[in-house]
Image (cartoon, rainbow, N blue to C red):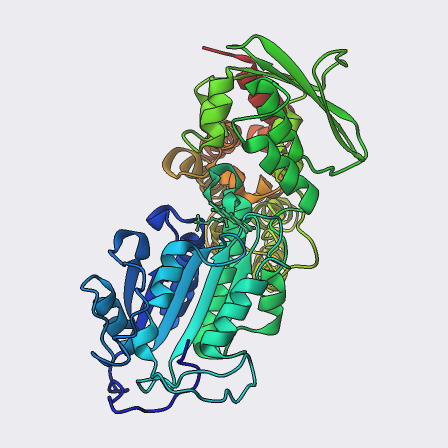
Length: 548
Ligand SMILES: Cc1cc2nc3c(=O)[nH]c(=O)nc-3n(C[C@H](O)[C@H](O)[C@H](O)COP(=O)(O)O)c2cc1C
Protein backbone atom coordinates (compact mmCIF):
# COMPACT_ATOMS: atom_id res chain seq x y z
CA UNK A 1 0.00 0.00 0.00
CA UNK A 2 1.64 3.05 1.32
CA UNK A 3 5.35 3.36 1.79
CA UNK A 4 6.14 4.72 -1.63
CA UNK A 5 7.73 7.98 -0.63
CA UNK A 6 9.99 8.46 2.32
CA UNK A 7 8.38 11.01 4.60
CA UNK A 8 9.07 11.14 8.32
CA UNK A 9 5.97 10.63 10.43
CA UNK A 10 6.76 10.91 14.11
CA UNK A 11 8.99 7.90 14.78
CA UNK A 12 12.67 8.38 14.16
CA UNK A 13 14.73 6.38 11.75
CA UNK A 14 17.50 4.11 12.96
CA UNK A 15 20.98 5.46 13.54
CA UNK A 16 22.70 5.37 10.15
CA UNK A 17 26.14 5.02 11.76
CA UNK A 18 25.26 1.44 12.78
CA UNK A 19 26.35 -1.66 10.85
CA UNK A 20 24.31 -2.16 7.69
CA UNK A 21 21.36 -4.50 8.20
CA UNK A 22 19.99 -6.83 5.56
CA UNK A 23 16.63 -8.46 5.94
CA UNK A 24 16.03 -11.46 3.67
CA UNK A 25 12.43 -12.59 3.29
CA UNK A 26 12.46 -16.13 1.90
CA UNK A 27 8.90 -16.45 0.64
CA UNK A 28 9.14 -19.89 -0.94
CA UNK A 29 6.95 -22.50 0.76
CA UNK A 30 9.95 -24.82 0.24
CA UNK A 31 12.02 -22.77 2.69
CA UNK A 32 15.72 -23.66 2.55
CA UNK A 33 15.12 -26.03 -0.37
CA UNK A 34 13.87 -23.19 -2.54
CA UNK A 35 15.39 -22.82 -6.02
CA UNK A 36 15.10 -19.08 -5.66
CA UNK A 37 16.87 -19.08 -2.33
CA UNK A 38 19.94 -20.58 -4.06
CA UNK A 39 19.96 -17.49 -6.25
CA UNK A 40 19.42 -15.29 -3.19
CA UNK A 41 22.33 -16.89 -1.36
CA UNK A 42 24.54 -16.27 -4.41
CA UNK A 43 23.43 -12.62 -4.45
CA UNK A 44 24.16 -12.26 -0.72
CA UNK A 45 27.62 -13.81 -1.26
CA UNK A 46 28.33 -10.97 -3.70
CA UNK A 47 26.94 -8.32 -1.34
CA UNK A 48 28.92 -9.56 1.66
CA UNK A 49 32.15 -10.07 -0.30
CA UNK A 50 32.86 -6.35 -0.09
CA UNK A 51 31.07 -5.27 3.08
CA UNK A 52 30.64 -6.55 6.57
CA UNK A 53 26.91 -6.71 7.07
CA UNK A 54 24.45 -8.18 9.45
CA UNK A 55 22.01 -10.50 7.72
CA UNK A 56 18.70 -11.68 9.11
CA UNK A 57 16.93 -14.32 7.05
CA UNK A 58 13.28 -15.01 7.68
CA UNK A 59 11.84 -18.21 6.29
CA UNK A 60 8.27 -17.02 5.89
CA UNK A 61 6.83 -20.56 5.69
CA UNK A 62 8.13 -21.30 9.20
CA UNK A 63 6.55 -18.20 10.70
CA UNK A 64 3.09 -17.83 12.12
CA UNK A 65 1.64 -15.04 10.00
CA UNK A 66 -2.12 -14.83 10.00
CA UNK A 67 -3.98 -13.15 7.15
CA UNK A 68 -4.86 -9.47 7.61
CA UNK A 69 -8.37 -9.09 9.09
CA UNK A 70 -9.02 -5.78 7.39
CA UNK A 71 -10.08 -4.15 10.68
CA UNK A 72 -7.85 -1.06 10.20
CA UNK A 73 -7.04 -1.12 13.94
CA UNK A 74 -3.39 -0.55 12.98
CA UNK A 75 -4.52 2.80 11.53
CA UNK A 76 -7.02 3.90 14.15
CA UNK A 77 -7.24 2.13 17.53
CA UNK A 78 -3.62 0.93 17.84
CA UNK A 79 -1.74 3.17 15.35
CA UNK A 80 1.24 1.42 13.81
CA UNK A 81 0.47 -1.85 15.61
CA UNK A 82 -1.51 -4.83 14.42
CA UNK A 83 -3.90 -6.39 16.91
CA UNK A 84 -3.02 -9.93 15.79
CA UNK A 85 -0.44 -11.39 18.20
CA UNK A 86 1.70 -13.50 15.88
CA UNK A 87 5.21 -13.36 14.36
CA UNK A 88 4.46 -10.39 12.13
CA UNK A 89 5.19 -7.79 14.85
CA UNK A 90 8.83 -8.91 15.03
CA UNK A 91 9.10 -9.01 11.26
CA UNK A 92 7.82 -5.44 10.99
CA UNK A 93 10.45 -4.25 13.49
CA UNK A 94 13.17 -5.91 11.44
CA UNK A 95 11.73 -4.50 8.24
CA UNK A 96 11.83 -0.96 9.67
CA UNK A 97 15.40 -1.42 10.90
CA UNK A 98 16.76 -2.96 7.68
CA UNK A 99 18.85 -0.92 5.26
CA UNK A 100 18.31 -3.50 2.55
CA UNK A 101 15.29 -5.74 2.19
CA UNK A 102 15.72 -8.74 -0.13
CA UNK A 103 12.52 -10.45 -1.24
CA UNK A 104 13.12 -14.02 -2.43
CA UNK A 105 10.19 -16.00 -3.82
CA UNK A 106 9.00 -18.25 -6.63
CA UNK A 107 6.50 -16.99 -9.15
CA UNK A 108 3.08 -18.46 -8.30
CA UNK A 109 0.31 -17.82 -10.78
CA UNK A 110 2.11 -14.75 -12.14
CA UNK A 111 2.34 -13.27 -8.67
CA UNK A 112 3.87 -13.90 -5.25
CA UNK A 113 3.04 -17.08 -3.26
CA UNK A 114 0.06 -16.76 -0.92
CA UNK A 115 2.18 -16.87 2.25
CA UNK A 116 4.12 -13.86 1.02
CA UNK A 117 0.98 -11.99 -0.01
CA UNK A 118 -0.21 -12.48 3.58
CA UNK A 119 3.00 -10.89 4.79
CA UNK A 120 2.66 -8.02 2.30
CA UNK A 121 -0.92 -7.35 3.46
CA UNK A 122 0.35 -7.23 7.02
CA UNK A 123 2.72 -4.37 6.11
CA UNK A 124 -0.31 -2.08 6.49
CA UNK A 125 0.80 -0.70 9.92
CA UNK A 126 3.79 0.86 8.10
CA UNK A 127 1.43 3.26 6.32
CA UNK A 128 -0.73 6.13 7.51
CA UNK A 129 -4.40 6.15 6.46
CA UNK A 130 -4.36 9.50 4.60
CA UNK A 131 -4.87 9.78 0.88
CA UNK A 132 -2.02 11.31 -1.11
CA UNK A 133 -1.19 11.85 -4.76
CA UNK A 134 1.70 9.73 -6.00
CA UNK A 135 4.48 11.79 -7.55
CA UNK A 136 4.92 9.07 -10.21
CA UNK A 137 1.21 9.18 -11.08
CA UNK A 138 0.91 5.40 -10.74
CA UNK A 139 -2.56 4.16 -9.83
CA UNK A 140 -4.95 6.50 -8.07
CA UNK A 141 -3.01 7.56 -5.03
CA UNK A 142 -1.08 6.19 -2.07
CA UNK A 143 -0.84 6.25 1.70
CA UNK A 144 2.11 8.06 3.23
CA UNK A 145 4.62 6.00 5.24
CA UNK A 146 4.42 6.06 9.03
CA UNK A 147 8.19 5.76 9.43
CA UNK A 148 11.17 7.40 7.80
CA UNK A 149 12.23 4.83 5.27
CA UNK A 150 14.66 7.12 3.45
CA UNK A 151 17.69 5.37 2.04
CA UNK A 152 16.24 1.88 2.43
CA UNK A 153 17.01 -0.30 -0.59
CA UNK A 154 14.99 -3.19 -1.96
CA UNK A 155 15.91 -6.21 -4.06
CA UNK A 156 13.38 -8.61 -5.57
CA UNK A 157 14.75 -12.04 -6.53
CA UNK A 158 12.53 -14.66 -8.10
CA UNK A 159 12.61 -17.79 -10.22
CA UNK A 160 9.78 -19.19 -12.28
CA UNK A 161 9.04 -22.48 -13.96
CA UNK A 162 8.64 -21.44 -17.61
CA UNK A 163 11.65 -21.25 -19.93
CA UNK A 164 11.91 -17.48 -19.58
CA UNK A 165 11.01 -14.81 -17.06
CA UNK A 166 10.01 -12.55 -19.93
CA UNK A 167 6.29 -11.78 -19.96
CA UNK A 168 5.61 -13.66 -16.71
CA UNK A 169 6.43 -10.98 -14.18
CA UNK A 170 4.00 -8.19 -15.16
CA UNK A 171 1.94 -8.85 -12.02
CA UNK A 172 4.98 -8.90 -9.73
CA UNK A 173 6.43 -5.74 -11.29
CA UNK A 174 3.10 -3.99 -10.96
CA UNK A 175 2.85 -4.99 -7.29
CA UNK A 176 6.33 -3.77 -6.35
CA UNK A 177 6.05 -0.66 -8.57
CA UNK A 178 3.06 0.31 -6.42
CA UNK A 179 4.74 -0.60 -3.14
CA UNK A 180 8.17 0.96 -3.74
CA UNK A 181 7.75 3.08 -6.86
CA UNK A 182 9.03 2.35 -10.34
CA UNK A 183 12.85 2.13 -10.48
CA UNK A 184 13.03 2.23 -6.67
CA UNK A 185 14.02 -1.39 -6.41
CA UNK A 186 16.38 -3.82 -8.10
CA UNK A 187 15.10 -7.10 -9.48
CA UNK A 188 16.44 -10.34 -10.94
CA UNK A 189 13.84 -12.67 -12.43
CA UNK A 190 15.04 -16.02 -13.74
CA UNK A 191 13.22 -18.62 -15.83
CA UNK A 192 13.90 -22.39 -15.72
CA UNK A 193 14.07 -22.13 -11.91
CA UNK A 194 13.53 -25.86 -11.33
CA UNK A 195 16.94 -26.55 -12.89
CA UNK A 196 18.68 -25.14 -9.81
CA UNK A 197 17.87 -28.33 -7.93
CA UNK A 198 19.24 -30.72 -10.58
CA UNK A 199 22.75 -31.78 -9.54
CA UNK A 200 23.68 -32.97 -13.03
CA UNK A 201 23.06 -29.48 -14.42
CA UNK A 202 25.14 -27.77 -11.78
CA UNK A 203 27.73 -26.69 -14.36
CA UNK A 204 25.15 -24.47 -16.08
CA UNK A 205 23.30 -23.33 -12.97
CA UNK A 206 26.54 -22.59 -11.08
CA UNK A 207 27.62 -20.36 -13.96
CA UNK A 208 24.38 -18.42 -13.60
CA UNK A 209 24.78 -18.26 -9.81
CA UNK A 210 28.30 -16.88 -10.25
CA UNK A 211 26.80 -14.13 -12.33
CA UNK A 212 24.21 -13.45 -9.62
CA UNK A 213 27.07 -13.17 -7.09
CA UNK A 214 28.75 -10.68 -9.41
CA UNK A 215 25.45 -8.77 -9.59
CA UNK A 216 25.29 -8.73 -5.77
CA UNK A 217 28.79 -7.34 -5.52
CA UNK A 218 28.10 -4.68 -8.18
CA UNK A 219 24.76 -3.81 -6.57
CA UNK A 220 26.29 -2.96 -3.22
CA UNK A 221 29.13 -0.95 -4.76
CA UNK A 222 27.93 0.91 -7.85
CA UNK A 223 24.71 -0.77 -8.97
CA UNK A 224 24.37 -3.77 -11.27
CA UNK A 225 26.19 -3.06 -14.55
CA UNK A 226 24.27 -3.12 -17.80
CA UNK A 227 26.29 -6.01 -19.23
CA UNK A 228 25.65 -8.08 -16.10
CA UNK A 229 21.91 -7.35 -16.32
CA UNK A 230 21.92 -8.44 -19.97
CA UNK A 231 23.79 -11.64 -19.17
CA UNK A 232 21.36 -12.38 -16.33
CA UNK A 233 18.59 -12.47 -18.90
CA UNK A 234 20.33 -15.19 -20.94
CA UNK A 235 18.48 -18.48 -20.80
CA UNK A 236 20.10 -21.29 -18.86
CA UNK A 237 19.19 -23.62 -21.73
CA UNK A 238 17.65 -22.93 -25.13
CA UNK A 239 13.81 -23.00 -25.04
CA UNK A 240 13.40 -26.33 -26.90
CA UNK A 241 16.04 -28.13 -24.84
CA UNK A 242 14.55 -26.90 -21.59
CA UNK A 243 10.96 -27.69 -22.48
CA UNK A 244 11.79 -31.17 -23.76
CA UNK A 245 13.85 -31.86 -20.65
CA UNK A 246 11.16 -30.46 -18.35
CA UNK A 247 8.38 -32.45 -20.02
CA UNK A 248 10.38 -35.64 -19.76
CA UNK A 249 11.25 -35.03 -16.10
CA UNK A 250 7.79 -35.74 -14.67
CA UNK A 251 7.23 -39.17 -13.21
CA UNK A 252 3.95 -39.33 -15.09
CA UNK A 253 3.16 -39.40 -18.76
CA UNK A 254 0.13 -39.72 -20.92
CA UNK A 255 1.77 -42.06 -23.41
CA UNK A 256 2.41 -44.94 -21.02
CA UNK A 257 6.10 -45.02 -21.94
CA UNK A 258 8.41 -46.81 -19.56
CA UNK A 259 10.80 -45.10 -17.17
CA UNK A 260 13.92 -46.00 -19.15
CA UNK A 261 12.49 -44.40 -22.27
CA UNK A 262 11.48 -41.30 -20.32
CA UNK A 263 14.97 -41.07 -18.88
CA UNK A 264 16.55 -41.56 -22.32
CA UNK A 265 14.35 -38.81 -23.79
CA UNK A 266 15.27 -36.49 -20.94
CA UNK A 267 18.95 -37.07 -21.56
CA UNK A 268 18.52 -36.76 -25.32
CA UNK A 269 16.89 -33.35 -24.78
CA UNK A 270 20.24 -32.12 -23.49
CA UNK A 271 22.00 -33.16 -26.70
CA UNK A 272 23.84 -30.43 -28.49
CA UNK A 273 25.63 -31.08 -31.83
CA UNK A 274 29.31 -30.20 -31.72
CA UNK A 275 30.23 -31.31 -35.25
CA UNK A 276 28.55 -32.78 -38.34
CA UNK A 277 29.40 -36.43 -37.50
CA UNK A 278 26.50 -38.80 -36.91
CA UNK A 279 26.77 -40.89 -33.75
CA UNK A 280 24.54 -43.55 -32.27
CA UNK A 281 24.45 -43.82 -28.49
CA UNK A 282 22.89 -47.09 -27.39
CA UNK A 283 21.55 -47.33 -23.85
CA UNK A 284 20.97 -50.83 -22.49
CA UNK A 285 19.28 -50.83 -19.08
CA UNK A 286 20.37 -54.08 -17.52
CA UNK A 287 17.66 -54.10 -14.81
CA UNK A 288 14.71 -53.59 -17.17
CA UNK A 289 16.28 -55.39 -20.13
CA UNK A 290 15.27 -52.51 -22.44
CA UNK A 291 17.43 -50.94 -25.14
CA UNK A 292 17.05 -47.47 -26.64
CA UNK A 293 19.18 -45.49 -29.04
CA UNK A 294 19.84 -41.78 -29.35
CA UNK A 295 20.74 -40.87 -32.93
CA UNK A 296 22.91 -37.78 -32.63
CA UNK A 297 23.30 -35.69 -35.78
CA UNK A 298 24.17 -32.10 -36.61
CA UNK A 299 20.45 -31.42 -37.07
CA UNK A 300 19.45 -32.71 -33.62
CA UNK A 301 18.54 -36.01 -32.06
CA UNK A 302 16.03 -38.85 -32.40
CA UNK A 303 15.26 -41.53 -29.81
CA UNK A 304 14.74 -45.02 -31.27
CA UNK A 305 12.90 -47.81 -29.49
CA UNK A 306 13.34 -50.36 -32.30
CA UNK A 307 14.84 -50.72 -35.82
CA UNK A 308 18.18 -49.96 -34.23
CA UNK A 309 21.27 -48.70 -36.10
CA UNK A 310 24.80 -50.02 -35.52
CA UNK A 311 25.95 -48.21 -32.39
CA UNK A 312 28.91 -45.88 -32.02
CA UNK A 313 28.92 -46.26 -28.24
CA UNK A 314 26.85 -48.61 -26.07
CA UNK A 315 26.40 -48.11 -22.35
CA UNK A 316 25.19 -51.03 -20.26
CA UNK A 317 23.96 -50.19 -16.80
CA UNK A 318 20.96 -50.56 -14.50
CA UNK A 319 18.56 -47.64 -14.90
CA UNK A 320 18.87 -47.11 -11.15
CA UNK A 321 22.54 -46.21 -11.59
CA UNK A 322 21.62 -43.54 -14.15
CA UNK A 323 18.96 -42.25 -11.81
CA UNK A 324 21.46 -42.06 -8.95
CA UNK A 325 23.83 -40.15 -11.21
CA UNK A 326 21.14 -37.70 -12.26
CA UNK A 327 20.10 -37.15 -8.64
CA UNK A 328 23.73 -36.44 -7.76
CA UNK A 329 23.99 -39.47 -5.43
CA UNK A 330 27.09 -40.61 -7.31
CA UNK A 331 29.10 -38.93 -10.04
CA UNK A 332 29.29 -40.53 -13.49
CA UNK A 333 33.05 -40.86 -13.09
CA UNK A 334 32.81 -42.55 -9.70
CA UNK A 335 30.17 -44.95 -11.06
CA UNK A 336 32.58 -45.85 -13.88
CA UNK A 337 35.48 -46.31 -11.44
CA UNK A 338 33.27 -48.65 -9.40
CA UNK A 339 32.47 -50.58 -12.60
CA UNK A 340 28.78 -49.81 -12.21
CA UNK A 341 28.43 -49.46 -15.96
CA UNK A 342 30.13 -50.89 -19.01
CA UNK A 343 30.94 -49.05 -22.22
CA UNK A 344 31.41 -50.68 -25.62
CA UNK A 345 32.53 -49.07 -28.86
CA UNK A 346 33.92 -45.56 -29.14
CA UNK A 347 34.92 -44.33 -25.67
CA UNK A 348 35.58 -40.85 -27.03
CA UNK A 349 31.93 -40.00 -26.57
CA UNK A 350 32.30 -40.62 -22.84
CA UNK A 351 35.34 -38.37 -22.63
CA UNK A 352 33.43 -35.55 -24.34
CA UNK A 353 30.10 -36.27 -22.60
CA UNK A 354 29.63 -32.71 -21.33
CA UNK A 355 30.19 -31.30 -24.83
CA UNK A 356 27.34 -33.44 -26.20
CA UNK A 357 24.98 -33.50 -23.23
CA UNK A 358 25.79 -30.22 -21.50
CA UNK A 359 22.64 -28.70 -23.00
CA UNK A 360 24.34 -26.47 -25.55
CA UNK A 361 24.99 -22.76 -25.41
CA UNK A 362 22.31 -20.51 -23.94
CA UNK A 363 20.76 -17.71 -25.96
CA UNK A 364 22.73 -14.62 -26.80
CA UNK A 365 26.25 -13.58 -26.07
CA UNK A 366 26.96 -14.07 -22.45
CA UNK A 367 29.73 -12.91 -20.21
CA UNK A 368 29.25 -16.08 -18.20
CA UNK A 369 31.03 -18.30 -20.67
CA UNK A 370 34.36 -18.83 -18.94
CA UNK A 371 37.24 -19.63 -21.21
CA UNK A 372 39.41 -22.55 -20.15
CA UNK A 373 42.91 -21.52 -19.19
CA UNK A 374 45.46 -22.00 -21.98
CA UNK A 375 48.37 -24.16 -20.91
CA UNK A 376 51.16 -25.87 -22.79
CA UNK A 377 53.38 -28.77 -21.76
CA UNK A 378 56.05 -27.26 -24.01
CA UNK A 379 56.88 -24.68 -21.33
CA UNK A 380 57.79 -27.51 -19.00
CA UNK A 381 59.75 -29.74 -21.35
CA UNK A 382 61.37 -27.40 -23.92
CA UNK A 383 63.86 -25.80 -21.46
CA UNK A 384 65.17 -29.30 -20.53
CA UNK A 385 65.23 -30.48 -24.19
CA UNK A 386 67.16 -27.37 -25.25
CA UNK A 387 69.52 -27.78 -22.30
CA UNK A 388 70.31 -31.45 -23.11
CA UNK A 389 70.84 -30.66 -26.81
CA UNK A 390 72.92 -27.50 -26.67
CA UNK A 391 74.97 -28.39 -23.61
CA UNK A 392 76.33 -31.45 -25.40
CA UNK A 393 76.90 -29.70 -28.74
CA UNK A 394 78.30 -26.38 -27.43
CA UNK A 395 79.57 -27.00 -23.89
CA UNK A 396 80.01 -23.38 -22.70
CA UNK A 397 78.01 -21.26 -25.16
CA UNK A 398 75.18 -23.80 -24.89
CA UNK A 399 74.70 -22.90 -21.23
CA UNK A 400 73.88 -19.28 -22.22
CA UNK A 401 71.42 -20.44 -24.90
CA UNK A 402 69.67 -22.71 -22.37
CA UNK A 403 69.52 -19.84 -19.84
CA UNK A 404 67.96 -17.50 -22.46
CA UNK A 405 65.37 -20.13 -23.45
CA UNK A 406 64.46 -20.97 -19.83
CA UNK A 407 64.36 -17.31 -18.81
CA UNK A 408 62.00 -16.45 -21.65
CA UNK A 409 59.25 -18.82 -20.38
CA UNK A 410 57.66 -16.14 -18.08
CA UNK A 411 57.30 -13.87 -21.16
CA UNK A 412 54.45 -16.13 -22.29
CA UNK A 413 52.49 -15.65 -19.10
CA UNK A 414 50.23 -12.98 -20.66
CA UNK A 415 48.73 -15.46 -23.12
CA UNK A 416 49.25 -18.77 -21.26
CA UNK A 417 48.56 -19.85 -17.70
CA UNK A 418 51.97 -21.12 -16.56
CA UNK A 419 51.88 -24.03 -14.15
CA UNK A 420 54.10 -24.67 -11.16
CA UNK A 421 55.92 -27.24 -13.32
CA UNK A 422 56.74 -24.62 -15.96
CA UNK A 423 58.24 -22.45 -13.23
CA UNK A 424 60.22 -25.31 -11.63
CA UNK A 425 61.46 -26.37 -15.07
CA UNK A 426 62.75 -22.93 -16.09
CA UNK A 427 64.38 -22.24 -12.71
CA UNK A 428 66.01 -25.69 -12.70
CA UNK A 429 67.41 -25.26 -16.22
CA UNK A 430 68.84 -21.83 -15.38
CA UNK A 431 70.51 -23.27 -12.25
CA UNK A 432 71.79 -26.34 -14.13
CA UNK A 433 73.15 -24.21 -16.98
CA UNK A 434 75.08 -22.04 -14.51
CA UNK A 435 76.32 -25.21 -12.77
CA UNK A 436 77.81 -26.53 -16.04
CA UNK A 437 80.20 -23.56 -15.97
CA UNK A 438 81.70 -24.81 -12.67
CA UNK A 439 80.97 -28.52 -12.29
CA UNK A 440 81.70 -31.62 -14.43
CA UNK A 441 79.18 -31.85 -17.27
CA UNK A 442 78.21 -35.50 -16.72
CA UNK A 443 77.40 -34.78 -13.09
CA UNK A 444 75.18 -31.80 -13.98
CA UNK A 445 73.49 -33.89 -16.71
CA UNK A 446 72.82 -36.71 -14.24
CA UNK A 447 71.26 -34.22 -11.83
CA UNK A 448 69.20 -32.68 -14.67
CA UNK A 449 67.73 -36.11 -15.57
CA UNK A 450 67.10 -36.71 -11.88
CA UNK A 451 65.21 -33.42 -11.50
CA UNK A 452 63.16 -34.07 -14.62
CA UNK A 453 62.35 -37.62 -13.47
CA UNK A 454 61.35 -36.26 -10.06
CA UNK A 455 58.89 -33.80 -11.65
CA UNK A 456 56.96 -36.68 -13.24
CA UNK A 457 57.29 -39.15 -10.38
CA UNK A 458 56.61 -36.80 -7.46
CA UNK A 459 53.59 -35.24 -9.21
CA UNK A 460 52.17 -38.73 -9.89
CA UNK A 461 52.91 -40.39 -6.59
CA UNK A 462 52.65 -37.52 -4.12
CA UNK A 463 50.08 -35.07 -5.51
CA UNK A 464 46.41 -35.36 -6.42
CA UNK A 465 46.98 -34.29 -10.00
CA UNK A 466 49.87 -35.67 -12.05
CA UNK A 467 51.97 -33.33 -14.17
CA UNK A 468 50.44 -34.22 -17.56
CA UNK A 469 46.88 -33.72 -16.26
CA UNK A 470 47.62 -30.02 -15.81
CA UNK A 471 48.08 -29.66 -19.55
CA UNK A 472 45.69 -32.05 -21.28
CA UNK A 473 42.37 -31.11 -19.61
CA UNK A 474 41.52 -28.79 -22.50
CA UNK A 475 41.48 -31.79 -24.86
CA UNK A 476 38.51 -33.07 -22.89
CA UNK A 477 36.40 -29.96 -23.15
CA UNK A 478 36.73 -28.49 -19.71
CA UNK A 479 38.45 -28.61 -16.37
CA UNK A 480 35.75 -30.82 -14.83
CA UNK A 481 38.03 -33.72 -15.83
CA UNK A 482 40.25 -32.79 -12.89
CA UNK A 483 37.63 -34.48 -10.72
CA UNK A 484 37.51 -37.49 -13.01
CA UNK A 485 39.35 -40.34 -11.25
CA UNK A 486 39.81 -42.32 -14.47
CA UNK A 487 41.41 -39.32 -16.19
CA UNK A 488 43.72 -38.82 -13.20
CA UNK A 489 44.58 -42.52 -13.00
CA UNK A 490 45.38 -42.71 -16.73
CA UNK A 491 47.68 -39.72 -16.50
CA UNK A 492 49.35 -41.00 -13.35
CA UNK A 493 50.28 -44.26 -15.10
CA UNK A 494 51.61 -42.36 -18.13
CA UNK A 495 53.61 -39.97 -15.96
CA UNK A 496 55.14 -42.78 -13.91
CA UNK A 497 56.32 -44.24 -17.25
CA UNK A 498 57.97 -40.95 -18.19
CA UNK A 499 59.47 -40.62 -14.73
CA UNK A 500 61.03 -44.10 -14.92
CA UNK A 501 62.62 -43.35 -18.31
CA UNK A 502 64.30 -40.20 -17.01
CA UNK A 503 65.27 -41.91 -13.75
CA UNK A 504 67.03 -44.58 -15.86
CA UNK A 505 68.80 -41.80 -17.82
CA UNK A 506 69.88 -40.29 -14.50
CA UNK A 507 71.29 -43.62 -13.27
CA UNK A 508 73.11 -44.35 -16.54
CA UNK A 509 74.62 -40.87 -16.60
CA UNK A 510 75.65 -41.05 -12.92
CA UNK A 511 77.32 -44.43 -13.43
CA UNK A 512 79.23 -43.34 -16.52
CA UNK A 513 77.11 -44.90 -19.28
CA UNK A 514 76.74 -41.57 -21.09
CA UNK A 515 75.95 -42.97 -24.53
CA UNK A 516 73.29 -45.30 -23.12
CA UNK A 517 71.75 -42.39 -21.27
CA UNK A 518 71.51 -40.39 -24.49
CA UNK A 519 70.15 -43.46 -26.30
CA UNK A 520 67.40 -43.92 -23.70
CA UNK A 521 66.64 -40.19 -23.84
CA UNK A 522 66.06 -40.42 -27.60
CA UNK A 523 64.80 -43.93 -28.43
CA UNK A 524 63.12 -44.51 -25.05
CA UNK A 525 61.24 -41.22 -25.11
CA UNK A 526 60.09 -41.78 -28.70
CA UNK A 527 58.68 -45.17 -27.70
CA UNK A 528 57.12 -43.66 -24.59
CA UNK A 529 55.53 -40.90 -26.73
CA UNK A 530 53.89 -43.55 -28.98
CA UNK A 531 52.78 -45.51 -25.90
CA UNK A 532 51.28 -42.36 -24.36
CA UNK A 533 49.14 -41.60 -27.43
CA UNK A 534 47.85 -45.20 -27.51
CA UNK A 535 47.44 -45.70 -23.77
CA UNK A 536 45.44 -42.52 -23.06
CA UNK A 537 42.73 -43.76 -25.42
CA UNK A 538 43.00 -47.48 -24.76
CA UNK A 539 43.07 -47.52 -20.96
CA UNK A 540 39.82 -45.62 -20.21
CA UNK A 541 38.01 -47.69 -22.85
CA UNK A 542 39.47 -50.93 -21.44
CA UNK A 543 38.49 -49.91 -17.92
CA UNK A 544 34.98 -49.02 -19.02
CA UNK A 545 34.41 -52.42 -20.67
CA UNK A 546 34.97 -54.24 -17.39
CA UNK A 547 32.09 -54.71 -14.99
CA UNK A 548 31.85 -56.10 -11.45
C1 LIG B 1 1.32 -23.13 -7.22
C2 LIG B 1 2.38 -22.84 -8.23
C3 LIG B 1 2.19 -21.86 -9.17
C4 LIG B 1 3.19 -21.57 -10.11
N1 LIG B 1 2.98 -20.60 -11.02
C5 LIG B 1 3.91 -20.33 -11.95
C6 LIG B 1 3.70 -19.32 -12.92
O1 LIG B 1 2.70 -18.64 -12.93
N2 LIG B 1 4.66 -19.12 -13.86
C7 LIG B 1 5.82 -19.82 -13.86
O2 LIG B 1 6.66 -19.62 -14.75
N3 LIG B 1 6.06 -20.77 -12.92
C8 LIG B 1 5.14 -21.02 -11.96
N4 LIG B 1 5.39 -21.97 -11.01
C9 LIG B 1 6.71 -22.63 -10.94
C10 LIG B 1 7.64 -22.00 -9.87
O3 LIG B 1 7.69 -20.61 -9.99
C11 LIG B 1 9.04 -22.57 -10.03
O4 LIG B 1 8.98 -23.95 -9.87
C12 LIG B 1 10.07 -21.96 -9.07
O5 LIG B 1 11.37 -22.18 -9.54
C13 LIG B 1 9.96 -22.54 -7.67
O6 LIG B 1 10.86 -21.83 -6.87
P1 LIG B 1 11.18 -22.18 -5.36
O7 LIG B 1 11.93 -23.48 -5.36
O8 LIG B 1 12.04 -21.03 -4.91
O9 LIG B 1 9.91 -22.27 -4.58
C14 LIG B 1 4.41 -22.28 -10.07
C15 LIG B 1 4.58 -23.29 -9.11
C16 LIG B 1 3.60 -23.57 -8.20
C17 LIG B 1 3.83 -24.66 -7.18
